[in-house]
Image (cartoon, rainbow, N blue to C red):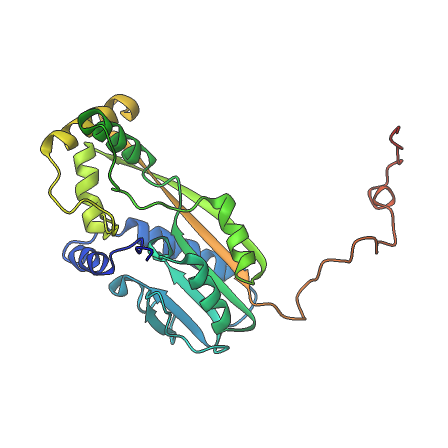
Length: 271
């Protein structure tokens, strides 16, 4: 039996704890990215849906939207929506392709999917520092930061899920912290703490975090005594296929030479 990536109960606890004193700059940046893309689409949406994990922040983002939690089985009817926004939770999905397929099936023809998630460059400084510290102290590693998809893979995932005109692009943010421990504390109030099913269930030693902090400062610290932390937002755009959309031409069906279109002289290559 394959173990799940995410401990769902731990993820829900982490999100609930974050509501006490939320650190929302990532959610705000994600919301701005989605809003920017919606303004570029010259189309009105009358039946939107929203998939989210942070209800306090995202509810109300799309007026009149059908709102659901980011469960592995998405509770949306098939062929019911002309817009689906998947808001900052796809990186915790056990089966992201399955989530994309479910969303596509819930779209009407020519319906738009917009998703935003954390990408593979996120917290690379912290991951490297923790891994080195654990290796130095214990000679091995334990899962501490969720694996996140790389942008080069996500465009292919959209195509596998059946989307047309699919695009994946990224936005890189850098935050500055007084110390690595301040970063780790703030992650708890983002709701992005360790919720991996395979995580270590006992308390980690202070020596581990002290050593990780030393490595972090030595490797990434700036001249002001602070440390940076990278967050990568990946935005996914795809459309449910429809006959009205632009279609690629069949290979060999061109009626004009490229050289004629560009107004240049064609040069033959030697065999």
